[in-house]
Image (cartoon, rainbow, N blue to C red; front, top):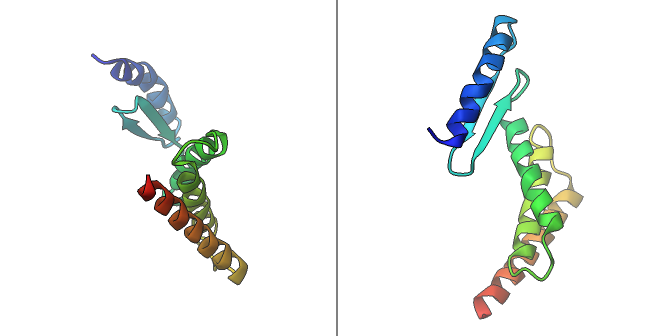
Length: 116
C-alpha cells in the first residue's frame, strides 16, 4: 500500500463522520503528485480551478526571474486568473488590454526560448 493510500485510509473515518452529519465532501486524489484534495459542499469547478491556479501563482511569484520559463508561467497564470475572476461577468476593456499585453509578453518570452 502506497503512502497516499495510507493517508486516504486514515482520513476516511473523518469523512464518514462528516457524511453522517449531512456534510458533503468530495475527495480528489492525484497519486502521481502525492496530493489529496478534500472539497466541501460549496465547491464548484470555478472555485476548484481558482484554488489550483493559486498554487501556480505562488510558484510564479516565488520563482526566480532568472529561470527560463518564469515569464511564460507568470503571464499565463495572470491571464488565467483574470479569466476565472470574471467567469460569471464581463471583462472590461482595460482587462482585455492587459491580457493582450500579457499574451504579447508570453510570445516574446517564447521567441527568446526558441532562440536558445
